[in-house]
Length: 131
Figure: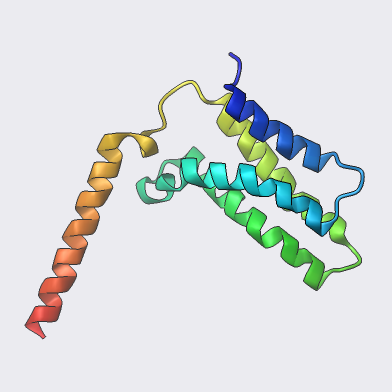
């Protein structure tokens, strides 16, 4: 099964960054596109507990920490490749396993999440009124 063109583009950007001969800190700016799209698609998985989505969201969040490596180990910038590899393989896993509907993105799961958040807010409001 072929990946949709958007997923193929995200994978191509990540792969080209990973195999780049000269990867400098400013070259990581192109990774903002795949990281932002991946976070947008999978951030709801953190609330619902959908494991593949959680892995993808955490790998994308890890990419925001990757440039910090230049501060701690400036002579070993190749260490940035580790979070980039984790993100790339998580992206391949999410694109390759794209056969079913992600329960974290279905309306029912989001409605349940909104319901639970509203219940928590109401409980907090009631607690504040009692004080």
